[in-house]
Length: 82
Ligand SMILES: [Zn+2]
Image (cartoon, rainbow, N blue to C red; front, side):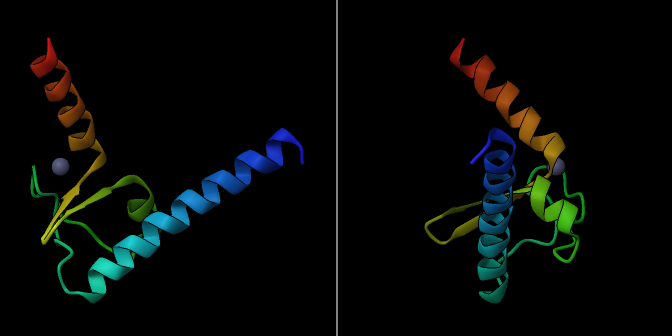
């Protein structure tokens, strides 16, 4: 297997896993319809959104973050550590 093939596979598996999780959450009726931080609307039928948004499930609580807020959360965490 060459490097290019492996990278393509990894990306596909990652996207599938994310989509699978989003679908599972959606089936439970718990997937938020907007970003948990900035309330930007989320369309779960939009494949690009599924790839770039982050679903965080912790026990019963489902949180959804848009790419912008993922960055902001990282910054906040970095600041908190320093
Ligand atoms: Zn957001």
